[in-house]
Length: 357
Image 1: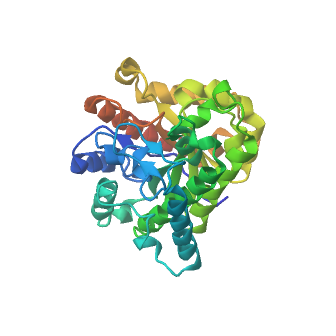
Image 2 (image 1 turned 180 degrees about the vertical axis):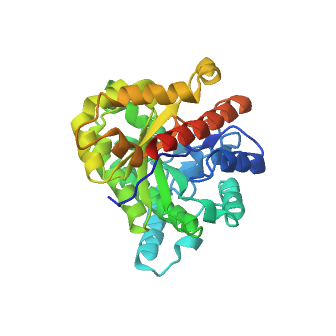
Image 3 (image 1 turned 90 degrees about the vertical axis):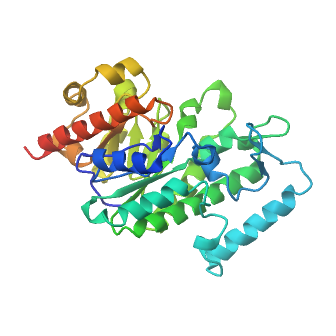
């Protein structure tokens, strides 16, 4: 775990519904200028959370709406062999990561590259900068082979996906470090909400821990801060024990579930960990329209009293917190997404006022 404090700054989860990258980037820089996050524009298939990180992955067929992994195709083993050869070359330093299969291409990285260009002249204003990759558990749980079997249950794909995303994470951290401020990289893991359910009853905790740790360690190797985002309830000990620096969850809807892990939370914060509280709702259109930043902050201050301890005071939590929307905004109408950004900016400003009062 790296020593760093969020100091109640606001930031975003990642996805936006806009089709104009310039507008989306400018909106983000206005709303969260101290920790801007590059936007994944979900309107473009190449930038959707699952699709964006498939480049370079062996056996993947994205030509139809349904993404398949040809685990039993004749060429699959050759593709895996070439993957490992390139992975080992990058590891050994005989091939540049920047020119490898693990870099974003012109389509998947269009908004990301533009974000870097725009921010290069404004990065001195930043407290940090944030990126994101799809988490390994979520990617494995979202890919199926020709027989409709999840890649999650294939040992070869478990290792390939973990190494693939570890390299994607390293590449992204390196690009963001060019902005000369701390880099935060979140693993987006919505599928972890299903861990322990009947859908994943045969999936071991050791498997989940292993694939997460490989990507988290890669972020740390490049000097980045690793975060994990789960937009629903999960077995939160997975996150607390994963080695991440930041845990991001939907505090608007699931504060009561998260608070059941009070002892683990106190230990996490005590070691320097940060919580990114997803206070601004994104799932209910009426809530987005009707909520106010003042009410969201008051609700958080009231709720947080139930988990504070002599060593984990409200002030300490504020110092080791970020404030975010509860999830990404990619599925919202543009006007509501912009309302979420506005509320997030206001929540951050009020929280920082409490911190410095």
